[in-house]
Amino acid sequence: MNIQIGIIGGSGLYEMAELTDREEKRVETPFGEPSAPYVLGTLRGKRVAFLARHGAGHRLSPSELNFRANIFGFKTLGVEYILSASAVGSLKEEYKPMDLLIPDQFFDRTKSRASTFFGEGLVAHVGFAHPFCKPLSKVALAAARSAGATVHEGGTYVCMEGPQFSTLAESKLYRAWGMDVIGMTNLQEAKLAREAEICYSTIALITDYDCWHPDHDQVTVDMIIANLTENARTAQQVIASAVGALPFDRTCECASALKHALITRPDSVPPSTKQKLEPIVGKYLR
Image (cartoon, rainbow, N blue to C red; front, side, top):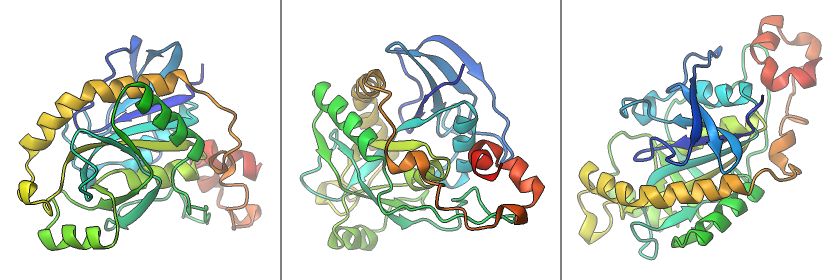
C-alpha cells in the first residue's frame, strides 16, 4: 500500500505521539541511506511515513544530511505530500519565540549541498519561483490556527549553512534585506521535493530572535531546546490536524513539475540514469 503523506521532524520533534500501528521501514536509495528508518503508521486515519531529519539521537548536522536519499525514499514509498517541521530563529520583532510561521519563500545561503537528482546525462530545470506548495501551506496554516497557535502567514526563510549560528553582522544584514526567519535545513528538501513532484510545506517553529536582538545576543542550544520542548506538543497537534485534512486534488504546479522541465532528448539519456531515476522520471521517458 502506497503511503501518500510524509512527515519530516526536525530538532525537538523526533516522533509523532499520536502515531499508531507503527513499523520501521528501511529504504535503500541510489543516493545512499536516509537519515533513519521511516516510521510507518496511522495518524488521524491516514497512513503516513515519519522521518527524523537528524537521525536517531540527533546525530547528523545540517551539512551532513543526505537530502537526496531522504526525499527519494519518500518518493519510493508513494508519498505525494510532505509536511516538515523545523526550528528557526526570528529576524523580526513581531515574530516571537514560540510562534509558528508558514513561509512562502527561500533565500539560499548554503554552500555545496547536493540539491538535485539530475545530472549523469539527464538535465532538468524545474520552476522554483514559488518554492512551497500553496495548497499544502494553506492546509498547514489552517491546522495551526485550529490548534490555537500564534501563526504567521508567509515570509522568507533564509537557509544558512551552519552548523554555527549567525554572526551579528550577518543577522543584521538579513534583517536589512527584509528576511523573516533563519534556519539550516529546509531549502534542499523543498528543491528535491519539487523535482520529485511532491507537494512540500514547512511549519517553522520559532525558538529565538537570532543574535540581532539585544536579549538574544548569544543564541544557545539550551535556549533553543527549551523552547522546542515546550512547542513540540503544539507542533504535533498542527501536523496531525493537517494530515487529517489531506489529501486534496493535486492541481498545483508540484504535481507536474517535470512535465516541461526535462531538456535532454529521451534517446540521449544513459540507460543507467533512466534506471536510477525511474521512480521520478519513468513516466516521462517510457
